[in-house]
Length: 417
Ligand code: PA5
Image 1: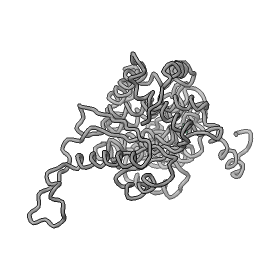
Image 2: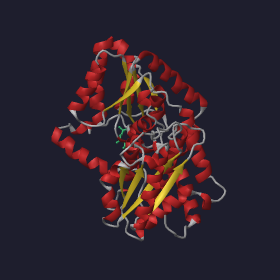
Image 3: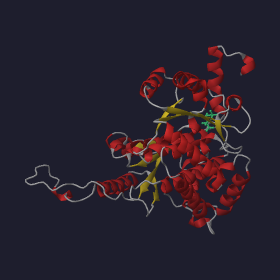
Image 4: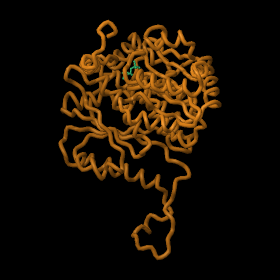
């Protein structure tokens, strides 16, 4: 990315600080005990066997990570029980569409809210619960609701206890946007057929090689976190663009933007996280990246090549000018486009960073293991660079402001505020 003298002692100091922070509990999620995994898998099996759909109700950190992995692995095309997502907006149209989709199908609900009081998921839950009760009766519905929430506090925990729902606890020390490797993400993903052990294995590998390594000089994670801070602080680059060449990473981008945006955007400071999917966006934002304002740096993701990629067929008497590509795979062509874009943007004065997550065991390019690695990589990098920036990586005071105004306009009684 850029040649800077990294202060590895400072890096170690911050890592130690994060490890002992009361909100650093997510650092141990890669070591989730086998009995917790077994519980998740057992309930996932029950849901899979009784439902065509599991509706995941949640927003922000209680939503985006799960969707990111579900889409990146294209689990929708293989899942016996498919995931649907609700409670992530206030759109009546979206919820109506979802209810229509559920019509005539067996379904269960996984309501996910750490606080248990967030308006969007709470409203969607109320509406979907009514549909569930209508279909299965009160008792039947109760058995099809799984609540993932705080271990003891909040309206959702209270309701779950009173109604006897199955529950998963989001342990203290795990904030929303750092929670995808907890039951928040692991349970619905297990329902959809994701190999959650491999996901955690990838995260463990990241921790071992990037954080707990003998010498932080070999840690790309530390290099990334410090470089992005240097680019911001010294060179005035206040926009980071996450770039990849795989459309199924659209929601991974959304997860990443939430992680960095909510962690760093404070006190009128912070790098604005943006994203592109190439080559689609080379015909759109690519122009800006190449020639627009130079306040941007770009982080590219590269995955292992997919085996069995489509290849360019041989054509007799072809007139499309593509003979030079005959027999070559789309994966190879896409990788060449990535190399070319890196070169062009470098030459155009954009600082670029490449994170290659290669998994020799995968045939699909993007695997559970590579995603687990990347998720952990970015979570730690985010906590590190927010600390360098001088802001708290784990709070989100700004999110409360709109809520206050909205509740005033909606006439929420103050004693329940
Ligand atoms: O990262 C965060 O903490 C937030 O994005 C929360 O996940 C989001 O606001 C949802 O909160 P809750 O899980 O309490 O409903």
